[in-house]
Length: 510
Image (cartoon, rainbow, N blue to C red):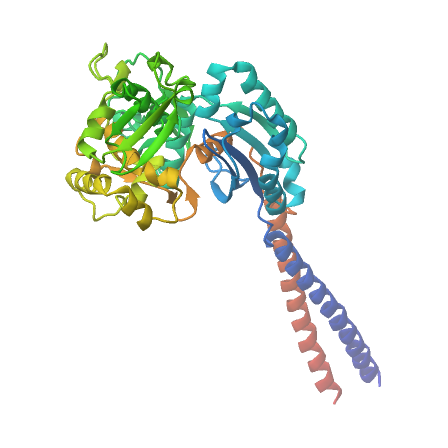
Protein backbone atom coordinates (compact mmCIF):
# COMPACT_ATOMS: atom_id res chain seq x y z
CA UNK A 1 0.00 0.00 0.00
CA UNK A 2 2.69 2.44 1.02
CA UNK A 3 4.70 1.49 -2.02
CA UNK A 4 1.84 2.40 -4.34
CA UNK A 5 1.30 5.78 -2.64
CA UNK A 6 5.02 6.53 -2.74
CA UNK A 7 5.24 5.77 -6.47
CA UNK A 8 2.23 8.00 -7.16
CA UNK A 9 3.91 10.89 -5.31
CA UNK A 10 7.12 10.39 -7.22
CA UNK A 11 5.23 10.25 -10.53
CA UNK A 12 3.42 13.48 -9.56
CA UNK A 13 6.66 15.20 -8.71
CA UNK A 14 8.29 13.90 -11.87
CA UNK A 15 5.51 15.21 -14.09
CA UNK A 16 5.58 18.67 -12.48
CA UNK A 17 9.34 18.71 -12.61
CA UNK A 18 9.26 17.92 -16.31
CA UNK A 19 6.71 20.70 -16.87
CA UNK A 20 8.88 23.20 -14.99
CA UNK A 21 11.98 22.07 -16.82
CA UNK A 22 10.09 22.26 -20.14
CA UNK A 23 9.08 25.87 -19.48
CA UNK A 24 12.64 26.65 -18.41
CA UNK A 25 14.00 25.03 -21.59
CA UNK A 26 11.64 26.97 -23.85
CA UNK A 27 12.33 30.28 -22.12
CA UNK A 28 16.09 29.72 -22.27
CA UNK A 29 15.89 28.79 -25.95
CA UNK A 30 13.86 31.94 -26.71
CA UNK A 31 16.33 34.06 -24.75
CA UNK A 32 19.28 32.47 -26.56
CA UNK A 33 17.72 33.13 -29.98
CA UNK A 34 16.68 36.67 -29.01
CA UNK A 35 20.17 37.60 -27.85
CA UNK A 36 21.75 36.11 -30.98
CA UNK A 37 19.32 37.74 -33.42
CA UNK A 38 19.41 41.12 -31.66
CA UNK A 39 23.19 41.22 -31.58
CA UNK A 40 23.64 40.12 -35.19
CA UNK A 41 20.77 41.86 -36.95
CA UNK A 42 21.72 43.94 -40.00
CA UNK A 43 22.07 47.63 -39.11
CA UNK A 44 20.84 50.17 -41.69
CA UNK A 45 23.56 51.53 -43.97
CA UNK A 46 24.76 54.93 -42.80
CA UNK A 47 25.31 57.17 -45.81
CA UNK A 48 26.27 60.80 -46.13
CA UNK A 49 25.60 63.12 -49.08
CA UNK A 50 27.37 66.15 -50.49
CA UNK A 51 26.57 68.69 -53.20
CA UNK A 52 29.16 70.54 -55.28
CA UNK A 53 28.41 73.21 -57.90
CA UNK A 54 30.98 73.57 -60.67
CA UNK A 55 30.49 77.21 -61.72
CA UNK A 56 32.55 77.28 -64.90
CA UNK A 57 33.17 80.03 -67.45
CA UNK A 58 30.48 78.87 -69.87
CA UNK A 59 28.03 76.86 -67.72
CA UNK A 60 27.28 75.58 -64.21
CA UNK A 61 26.71 71.96 -63.22
CA UNK A 62 25.55 70.55 -59.88
CA UNK A 63 26.89 67.18 -58.73
CA UNK A 64 25.44 65.10 -55.89
CA UNK A 65 27.81 62.69 -54.16
CA UNK A 66 27.21 59.90 -51.69
CA UNK A 67 29.54 58.01 -49.37
CA UNK A 68 29.48 55.69 -46.41
CA UNK A 69 29.91 57.43 -43.07
CA UNK A 70 32.45 54.78 -42.05
CA UNK A 71 35.72 55.77 -43.71
CA UNK A 72 38.67 53.84 -45.11
CA UNK A 73 41.97 55.23 -43.77
CA UNK A 74 40.26 58.57 -42.96
CA UNK A 75 38.94 59.16 -46.49
CA UNK A 76 35.33 58.65 -47.56
CA UNK A 77 34.46 56.36 -50.48
CA UNK A 78 32.67 58.97 -52.57
CA UNK A 79 30.76 58.41 -55.79
CA UNK A 80 28.44 60.46 -57.99
CA UNK A 81 24.73 59.69 -57.95
CA UNK A 82 23.37 62.63 -59.97
CA UNK A 83 24.47 65.58 -62.09
CA UNK A 84 22.26 68.50 -63.06
CA UNK A 85 23.33 70.98 -65.72
CA UNK A 86 22.06 74.47 -64.95
CA UNK A 87 20.39 76.06 -67.94
CA UNK A 88 22.13 79.24 -69.05
CA UNK A 89 25.67 80.71 -69.14
CA UNK A 90 28.32 80.71 -66.42
CA UNK A 91 27.59 82.73 -63.26
CA UNK A 92 30.04 85.46 -64.28
CA UNK A 93 27.43 86.54 -66.84
CA UNK A 94 25.05 87.62 -64.01
CA UNK A 95 27.07 90.64 -62.91
CA UNK A 96 24.37 93.03 -64.14
CA UNK A 97 21.29 90.90 -63.36
CA UNK A 98 21.81 89.40 -59.90
CA UNK A 99 18.05 89.04 -59.46
CA UNK A 100 18.06 86.15 -61.96
CA UNK A 101 20.42 83.95 -59.92
CA UNK A 102 17.66 82.29 -57.79
CA UNK A 103 15.78 81.21 -60.90
CA UNK A 104 19.07 80.11 -62.46
CA UNK A 105 19.92 77.68 -59.62
CA UNK A 106 16.49 76.70 -58.29
CA UNK A 107 15.72 73.80 -60.64
CA UNK A 108 18.85 71.84 -59.72
CA UNK A 109 18.43 72.58 -56.01
CA UNK A 110 14.88 71.28 -56.25
CA UNK A 111 16.25 68.09 -57.72
CA UNK A 112 18.68 67.77 -54.80
CA UNK A 113 15.78 68.10 -52.31
CA UNK A 114 13.95 65.28 -54.08
CA UNK A 115 16.90 62.93 -54.31
CA UNK A 116 18.45 63.30 -50.84
CA UNK A 117 16.34 61.91 -47.94
CA UNK A 118 14.70 64.70 -45.99
CA UNK A 119 16.20 63.61 -42.66
CA UNK A 120 19.65 63.98 -44.24
CA UNK A 121 19.15 67.54 -45.55
CA UNK A 122 20.57 69.37 -42.55
CA UNK A 123 23.67 67.13 -42.57
CA UNK A 124 24.37 67.51 -46.30
CA UNK A 125 27.14 70.03 -47.10
CA UNK A 126 26.74 72.25 -50.17
CA UNK A 127 29.71 73.91 -51.86
CA UNK A 128 29.96 76.15 -54.90
CA UNK A 129 33.32 76.50 -56.58
CA UNK A 130 33.71 79.11 -59.31
CA UNK A 131 36.55 78.67 -61.78
CA UNK A 132 38.27 80.65 -64.53
CA UNK A 133 35.27 82.73 -65.66
CA UNK A 134 34.95 84.23 -62.20
CA UNK A 135 38.74 84.53 -61.88
CA UNK A 136 38.73 86.74 -64.96
CA UNK A 137 35.77 88.77 -63.67
CA UNK A 138 37.53 89.30 -60.34
CA UNK A 139 40.59 90.61 -62.21
CA UNK A 140 38.39 93.02 -64.18
CA UNK A 141 35.93 94.01 -61.44
CA UNK A 142 36.40 92.56 -57.98
CA UNK A 143 33.22 94.17 -56.62
CA UNK A 144 31.06 92.55 -59.32
CA UNK A 145 32.56 89.15 -58.57
CA UNK A 146 31.91 89.63 -54.86
CA UNK A 147 28.29 90.65 -55.45
CA UNK A 148 27.66 87.51 -57.50
CA UNK A 149 29.12 85.29 -54.77
CA UNK A 150 27.05 87.10 -52.11
CA UNK A 151 23.88 86.61 -54.15
CA UNK A 152 24.64 82.91 -54.63
CA UNK A 153 25.37 82.57 -50.91
CA UNK A 154 22.09 84.25 -49.95
CA UNK A 155 20.07 81.95 -52.21
CA UNK A 156 21.76 78.64 -51.36
CA UNK A 157 21.63 79.44 -47.63
CA UNK A 158 17.83 79.55 -47.83
CA UNK A 159 17.69 75.79 -48.41
CA UNK A 160 17.60 73.26 -45.54
CA UNK A 161 21.06 71.95 -46.43
CA UNK A 162 24.35 72.72 -44.67
CA UNK A 163 25.68 75.43 -47.00
CA UNK A 164 29.47 75.69 -46.61
CA UNK A 165 30.20 78.61 -48.91
CA UNK A 166 30.60 79.88 -52.47
CA UNK A 167 34.09 80.87 -53.49
CA UNK A 168 36.42 81.24 -56.44
CA UNK A 169 38.83 78.32 -56.35
CA UNK A 170 42.38 78.80 -57.58
CA UNK A 171 43.66 77.28 -60.79
CA UNK A 172 46.01 75.08 -58.76
CA UNK A 173 43.10 73.72 -56.74
CA UNK A 174 41.12 73.03 -59.90
CA UNK A 175 44.03 71.11 -61.41
CA UNK A 176 44.85 69.17 -58.24
CA UNK A 177 41.25 68.15 -57.54
CA UNK A 178 40.91 66.95 -61.14
CA UNK A 179 43.99 64.82 -60.55
CA UNK A 180 42.42 63.35 -57.41
CA UNK A 181 39.20 62.59 -59.29
CA UNK A 182 40.65 60.52 -62.11
CA UNK A 183 43.10 58.65 -59.90
CA UNK A 184 40.37 57.87 -57.40
CA UNK A 185 38.05 56.58 -60.13
CA UNK A 186 40.84 54.54 -61.71
CA UNK A 187 41.60 52.93 -58.35
CA UNK A 188 45.08 54.42 -58.09
CA UNK A 189 44.70 56.01 -54.64
CA UNK A 190 43.35 53.10 -52.60
CA UNK A 191 46.30 50.79 -53.26
CA UNK A 192 48.72 50.80 -50.36
CA UNK A 193 52.40 50.29 -51.10
CA UNK A 194 53.76 47.11 -49.52
CA UNK A 195 57.38 47.55 -50.49
CA UNK A 196 59.89 47.65 -47.63
CA UNK A 197 62.29 49.73 -49.70
CA UNK A 198 62.28 53.30 -48.22
CA UNK A 199 62.94 54.86 -51.64
CA UNK A 200 59.92 53.03 -53.00
CA UNK A 201 57.76 54.44 -50.20
CA UNK A 202 58.97 57.96 -50.98
CA UNK A 203 57.85 57.50 -54.59
CA UNK A 204 54.68 55.65 -53.64
CA UNK A 205 52.50 57.59 -56.10
CA UNK A 206 54.57 57.16 -59.29
CA UNK A 207 51.90 54.91 -60.78
CA UNK A 208 49.19 57.57 -60.66
CA UNK A 209 47.86 59.18 -63.81
CA UNK A 210 48.56 62.77 -64.71
CA UNK A 211 45.54 65.02 -65.35
CA UNK A 212 44.86 67.36 -68.27
CA UNK A 213 41.86 69.66 -67.94
CA UNK A 214 40.70 72.08 -70.63
CA UNK A 215 37.91 74.55 -69.97
CA UNK A 216 36.63 77.63 -71.71
CA UNK A 217 38.92 80.14 -69.99
CA UNK A 218 41.78 78.10 -68.49
CA UNK A 219 43.66 74.84 -68.80
CA UNK A 220 45.41 72.79 -66.11
CA UNK A 221 48.16 70.18 -66.10
CA UNK A 222 48.81 68.09 -62.96
CA UNK A 223 51.04 65.10 -62.31
CA UNK A 224 53.49 63.51 -59.89
CA UNK A 225 57.01 64.29 -61.16
CA UNK A 226 59.49 61.48 -61.61
CA UNK A 227 62.10 63.23 -59.49
CA UNK A 228 60.49 64.13 -56.16
CA UNK A 229 63.74 65.57 -54.79
CA UNK A 230 63.90 68.56 -57.14
CA UNK A 231 63.69 72.01 -55.59
CA UNK A 232 61.07 73.81 -57.67
CA UNK A 233 60.51 77.58 -57.72
CA UNK A 234 56.88 76.86 -56.82
CA UNK A 235 55.54 74.63 -54.07
CA UNK A 236 54.10 71.27 -54.98
CA UNK A 237 50.65 70.54 -53.55
CA UNK A 238 50.57 67.97 -50.76
CA UNK A 239 47.75 65.48 -50.20
CA UNK A 240 47.19 62.57 -47.85
CA UNK A 241 44.61 60.13 -49.17
CA UNK A 242 43.90 56.54 -48.10
CA UNK A 243 46.98 56.53 -45.91
CA UNK A 244 49.37 57.65 -48.69
CA UNK A 245 51.16 60.99 -49.12
CA UNK A 246 51.29 62.66 -52.54
CA UNK A 247 53.43 65.54 -53.77
CA UNK A 248 51.83 66.88 -56.95
CA UNK A 249 52.93 69.44 -59.54
CA UNK A 250 50.05 71.48 -60.87
CA UNK A 251 49.75 74.66 -62.91
CA UNK A 252 46.78 76.50 -64.35
CA UNK A 253 47.11 78.67 -67.45
CA UNK A 254 44.49 81.40 -67.35
CA UNK A 255 43.41 82.66 -70.80
CA UNK A 256 44.49 79.38 -72.41
CA UNK A 257 41.11 77.69 -72.23
CA UNK A 258 39.54 76.85 -75.57
CA UNK A 259 37.25 79.89 -75.85
CA UNK A 260 39.78 82.45 -74.64
CA UNK A 261 42.51 80.96 -76.84
CA UNK A 262 40.33 81.55 -79.91
CA UNK A 263 39.79 85.18 -78.89
CA UNK A 264 43.54 85.58 -78.32
CA UNK A 265 44.26 84.14 -81.75
CA UNK A 266 41.76 86.44 -83.49
CA UNK A 267 43.05 89.47 -81.55
CA UNK A 268 46.59 88.61 -82.64
CA UNK A 269 45.62 87.91 -86.27
CA UNK A 270 43.69 91.17 -86.67
CA UNK A 271 47.04 92.80 -87.39
CA UNK A 272 47.08 90.75 -90.61
CA UNK A 273 43.67 92.03 -91.70
CA UNK A 274 44.17 95.74 -92.56
CA UNK A 275 40.94 95.79 -94.54
CA UNK A 276 38.92 94.08 -91.83
CA UNK A 277 38.84 90.74 -93.65
CA UNK A 278 40.74 87.80 -92.12
CA UNK A 279 41.49 84.66 -94.12
CA UNK A 280 41.53 82.17 -91.26
CA UNK A 281 42.94 78.63 -91.75
CA UNK A 282 41.27 77.39 -88.54
CA UNK A 283 37.76 77.53 -90.04
CA UNK A 284 36.27 75.49 -92.88
CA UNK A 285 36.42 76.78 -96.48
CA UNK A 286 33.30 78.81 -97.17
CA UNK A 287 32.62 79.60 -93.50
CA UNK A 288 32.00 83.27 -92.65
CA UNK A 289 31.70 85.01 -89.31
CA UNK A 290 31.63 88.67 -88.26
CA UNK A 291 33.11 89.72 -84.91
CA UNK A 292 32.69 93.11 -83.27
CA UNK A 293 36.16 94.56 -82.63
CA UNK A 294 35.12 96.13 -79.31
CA UNK A 295 33.86 92.73 -78.11
CA UNK A 296 37.11 91.13 -79.18
CA UNK A 297 39.23 93.41 -77.01
CA UNK A 298 36.83 93.90 -74.09
CA UNK A 299 38.56 91.08 -72.31
CA UNK A 300 41.49 90.66 -69.93
CA UNK A 301 42.98 87.91 -72.08
CA UNK A 302 43.10 89.97 -75.30
CA UNK A 303 43.85 93.45 -73.96
CA UNK A 304 47.58 93.13 -74.69
CA UNK A 305 46.82 93.00 -78.43
CA UNK A 306 44.53 96.05 -78.47
CA UNK A 307 45.24 98.88 -80.85
CA UNK A 308 43.65 101.39 -83.22
CA UNK A 309 41.88 99.91 -86.24
CA UNK A 310 40.09 101.67 -89.11
CA UNK A 311 37.15 99.24 -88.91
CA UNK A 312 34.65 98.22 -86.23
CA UNK A 313 33.97 94.70 -87.43
CA UNK A 314 36.28 91.84 -88.34
CA UNK A 315 35.01 89.53 -91.07
CA UNK A 316 36.38 85.99 -90.88
CA UNK A 317 36.56 83.84 -94.02
CA UNK A 318 37.65 80.25 -93.44
CA UNK A 319 40.28 78.54 -95.61
CA UNK A 320 40.51 75.18 -93.79
CA UNK A 321 44.27 74.57 -93.65
CA UNK A 322 45.28 72.52 -90.64
CA UNK A 323 49.03 73.00 -90.98
CA UNK A 324 48.77 76.79 -91.27
CA UNK A 325 46.27 76.89 -88.39
CA UNK A 326 48.72 75.06 -86.14
CA UNK A 327 51.55 77.41 -87.09
CA UNK A 328 49.35 80.37 -86.20
CA UNK A 329 48.41 78.81 -82.85
CA UNK A 330 52.03 78.13 -81.97
CA UNK A 331 52.49 81.91 -81.81
CA UNK A 332 50.30 81.90 -78.68
CA UNK A 333 52.93 79.85 -76.84
CA UNK A 334 56.34 81.34 -76.09
CA UNK A 335 58.78 78.49 -75.56
CA UNK A 336 62.20 80.15 -75.85
CA UNK A 337 62.56 81.88 -72.47
CA UNK A 338 63.27 79.47 -69.57
CA UNK A 339 65.20 80.38 -66.40
CA UNK A 340 64.84 76.89 -64.90
CA UNK A 341 66.09 73.40 -65.65
CA UNK A 342 62.74 72.55 -67.28
CA UNK A 343 59.85 74.68 -68.54
CA UNK A 344 56.61 74.52 -70.36
CA UNK A 345 55.54 77.57 -72.43
CA UNK A 346 55.72 81.22 -71.30
CA UNK A 347 58.78 80.48 -69.16
CA UNK A 348 56.71 78.58 -66.56
CA UNK A 349 58.60 75.95 -64.56
CA UNK A 350 57.38 72.40 -65.14
CA UNK A 351 59.17 69.08 -64.52
CA UNK A 352 59.39 66.78 -67.56
CA UNK A 353 56.06 65.05 -68.18
CA UNK A 354 56.07 61.32 -67.53
CA UNK A 355 53.65 58.43 -67.29
CA UNK A 356 50.05 58.08 -68.40
CA UNK A 357 47.66 61.07 -68.53
CA UNK A 358 43.89 61.37 -68.43
CA UNK A 359 42.54 64.25 -70.55
CA UNK A 360 38.98 65.38 -69.83
CA UNK A 361 36.46 68.23 -70.20
CA UNK A 362 36.99 70.04 -73.53
CA UNK A 363 39.84 67.69 -74.41
CA UNK A 364 37.38 64.82 -74.47
CA UNK A 365 34.41 66.66 -75.97
CA UNK A 366 36.51 67.96 -78.87
CA UNK A 367 38.36 64.77 -79.71
CA UNK A 368 35.28 62.61 -79.23
CA UNK A 369 33.31 64.68 -81.76
CA UNK A 370 36.20 64.34 -84.21
CA UNK A 371 36.16 60.56 -83.61
CA UNK A 372 39.75 60.66 -82.40
CA UNK A 373 39.27 58.89 -79.05
CA UNK A 374 38.87 55.45 -80.61
CA UNK A 375 41.48 52.72 -80.09
CA UNK A 376 41.71 52.55 -83.87
CA UNK A 377 43.44 55.95 -83.82
CA UNK A 378 46.85 54.66 -82.87
CA UNK A 379 49.34 57.37 -83.78
CA UNK A 380 49.89 61.12 -83.97
CA UNK A 381 50.33 60.85 -87.74
CA UNK A 382 46.86 59.32 -88.08
CA UNK A 383 45.38 62.13 -85.97
CA UNK A 384 47.04 64.82 -88.07
CA UNK A 385 45.84 63.17 -91.28
CA UNK A 386 42.25 63.09 -89.99
CA UNK A 387 42.47 66.72 -88.86
CA UNK A 388 43.75 67.85 -92.25
CA UNK A 389 40.84 66.15 -94.00
CA UNK A 390 38.26 67.47 -91.52
CA UNK A 391 39.43 71.09 -91.68
CA UNK A 392 39.56 70.99 -95.49
CA UNK A 393 35.89 69.95 -95.80
CA UNK A 394 33.67 72.76 -97.15
CA UNK A 395 31.52 74.42 -94.49
CA UNK A 396 28.34 73.74 -96.42
CA UNK A 397 29.08 70.01 -96.44
CA UNK A 398 30.00 69.96 -92.73
CA UNK A 399 26.90 71.93 -91.77
CA UNK A 400 24.70 69.49 -93.67
CA UNK A 401 26.39 66.38 -92.28
CA UNK A 402 26.08 67.55 -88.65
CA UNK A 403 22.76 69.35 -88.93
CA UNK A 404 21.85 68.60 -85.29
CA UNK A 405 24.93 70.32 -83.81
CA UNK A 406 24.74 73.96 -82.78
CA UNK A 407 26.52 76.03 -85.45
CA UNK A 408 28.78 77.93 -83.07
CA UNK A 409 30.24 74.71 -81.69
CA UNK A 410 30.34 72.97 -85.06
CA UNK A 411 32.18 75.82 -86.73
CA UNK A 412 34.94 75.75 -84.10
CA UNK A 413 35.82 72.04 -84.07
CA UNK A 414 38.59 72.49 -86.64
CA UNK A 415 40.14 75.19 -84.44
CA UNK A 416 39.50 73.24 -81.22
CA UNK A 417 41.02 69.99 -82.50
CA UNK A 418 44.09 71.83 -83.80
CA UNK A 419 44.39 73.73 -80.53
CA UNK A 420 44.35 70.50 -78.48
CA UNK A 421 47.22 69.08 -80.53
CA UNK A 422 49.16 72.34 -80.34
CA UNK A 423 48.66 72.63 -76.57
CA UNK A 424 49.95 69.08 -76.03
CA UNK A 425 52.97 69.96 -78.16
CA UNK A 426 53.55 73.08 -76.03
CA UNK A 427 53.50 70.87 -72.92
CA UNK A 428 56.46 68.97 -74.42
CA UNK A 429 54.63 65.68 -74.88
CA UNK A 430 56.43 63.34 -77.27
CA UNK A 431 54.71 60.36 -78.85
CA UNK A 432 51.77 61.49 -76.73
CA UNK A 433 49.06 59.46 -78.41
CA UNK A 434 50.27 56.35 -76.62
CA UNK A 435 50.14 57.96 -73.19
CA UNK A 436 47.09 60.25 -73.24
CA UNK A 437 43.65 58.78 -72.59
CA UNK A 438 40.61 60.93 -73.32
CA UNK A 439 38.05 60.50 -70.54
CA UNK A 440 34.46 61.51 -69.95
CA UNK A 441 32.67 59.20 -67.51
CA UNK A 442 34.85 56.71 -65.68
CA UNK A 443 33.30 53.42 -64.53
CA UNK A 444 30.33 54.38 -66.75
CA UNK A 445 28.72 56.72 -64.23
CA UNK A 446 31.06 59.30 -62.70
CA UNK A 447 32.30 62.29 -64.66
CA UNK A 448 35.96 63.19 -64.75
CA UNK A 449 36.48 66.72 -63.41
CA UNK A 450 37.57 68.61 -60.32
CA UNK A 451 34.34 68.41 -58.27
CA UNK A 452 34.62 64.79 -57.13
CA UNK A 453 38.23 65.37 -56.07
CA UNK A 454 37.07 68.44 -54.16
CA UNK A 455 34.39 66.44 -52.36
CA UNK A 456 36.77 63.55 -51.75
CA UNK A 457 39.41 65.78 -50.24
CA UNK A 458 36.82 67.53 -48.06
CA UNK A 459 35.75 64.21 -46.53
CA UNK A 460 39.06 64.26 -44.69
CA UNK A 461 37.60 67.15 -42.69
CA UNK A 462 34.14 65.66 -42.18
CA UNK A 463 34.21 63.56 -38.97
CA UNK A 464 33.71 59.85 -39.46
CA UNK A 465 30.74 58.34 -37.72
CA UNK A 466 31.13 55.10 -35.79
CA UNK A 467 28.88 52.24 -36.88
CA UNK A 468 25.66 51.94 -34.88
CA UNK A 469 26.67 50.23 -31.57
CA UNK A 470 25.58 46.65 -30.86
CA UNK A 471 22.97 46.11 -28.09
CA UNK A 472 25.52 44.18 -26.01
CA UNK A 473 29.26 44.51 -25.64
CA UNK A 474 31.23 41.54 -26.93
CA UNK A 475 32.05 40.15 -23.43
CA UNK A 476 28.40 40.54 -22.33
CA UNK A 477 27.15 38.91 -25.53
CA UNK A 478 29.49 35.91 -25.10
CA UNK A 479 28.59 35.58 -21.40
CA UNK A 480 24.84 35.58 -22.13
CA UNK A 481 25.18 33.06 -24.96
CA UNK A 482 27.28 30.74 -22.76
CA UNK A 483 24.92 31.14 -19.78
CA UNK A 484 21.75 30.36 -21.74
CA UNK A 485 23.47 27.47 -23.49
CA UNK A 486 24.50 26.00 -20.14
CA UNK A 487 20.95 26.41 -18.81
CA UNK A 488 19.63 24.54 -21.85
CA UNK A 489 22.19 21.79 -21.35
CA UNK A 490 21.44 21.43 -17.61
CA UNK A 491 17.66 21.43 -18.22
CA UNK A 492 18.06 18.81 -20.92
CA UNK A 493 20.16 16.56 -18.65
CA UNK A 494 17.81 16.95 -15.66
CA UNK A 495 14.80 16.34 -17.84
CA UNK A 496 16.34 13.16 -19.21
CA UNK A 497 17.12 11.89 -15.69
CA UNK A 498 13.62 12.65 -14.38
CA UNK A 499 12.03 11.11 -17.45
CA UNK A 500 13.98 7.87 -17.06
CA UNK A 501 13.23 7.68 -13.29
CA UNK A 502 9.54 8.29 -13.97
CA UNK A 503 9.48 5.40 -16.42
CA UNK A 504 11.24 3.16 -13.82
CA UNK A 505 8.64 3.89 -11.10
CA UNK A 506 5.78 3.21 -13.50
CA UNK A 507 7.22 -0.25 -14.21
CA UNK A 508 7.70 -0.94 -10.49
CA UNK A 509 4.10 0.05 -9.79
CA UNK A 510 2.85 -2.43 -12.35
